[in-house]
Length: 304
Image (tube, rainbow, N blue to C red; front, top):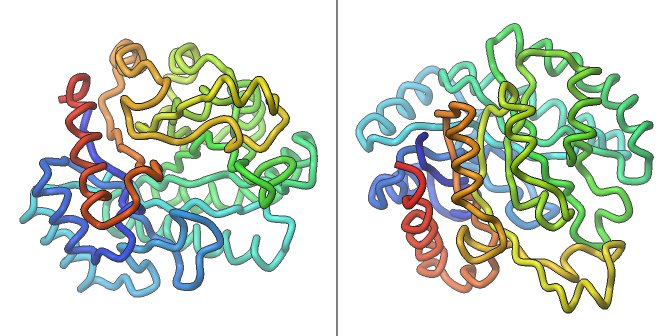
């Protein structure tokens, strides 16, 4: 397995600065954020270290050369929008940019895109599955034609009132994964597996690794800390951030030894990226860098 990080935490860094940071810390890869220009609607969105709209042959060659000089690889191009947004203009824009990211991933020889499948937060699971079958076949057709795999992260995108009640990503549980893969049987559609989201949903994050071993295309390392005393007061129907908090690996409730052990059991030998969303490490540029240093130090117990 190769250890990297999600570049979105380095908001304000240039592509070169981001890659230099990875190289100086000894990271092997980066999951490169590729959001379109414009104001972000949420934290960690809107970051772009590769502008896919400006990607020509000269830029492709430059990116390849810079990465080779620094000894860093791109694990995936990352763009996490809501492609099933109830606002049709936002939906169309998200789908269009996702297709650009898929084309860019092909041009760069990365051939992997990490994203969300989306969800209309006002509709039921069943209605969203139907909507998914309208929106996603053309996206997957493009990916298949270009030989690009698409890995869907299992984040519910439900944290507070802005995503209430259903959240903005459908692909949240193993039960739903089965339905998605049945209705979208593309070999190019898979999972960007993040155990932390199962923790706060009170679910088993180990068993699905074995069941979906052939669909795990990319892996995230992010932790979650549950606050039982808060949960007892607000219950599971509350906004999730009322009873949990994202943390660096090792500072929350994920059993990383069991998690990585399961990945080795299935023979996973791909890219694994630390995703930093710990507010305790966002006070300054140096604290952000500390978060990457500390996370790497911890995960190297399990990943070489």
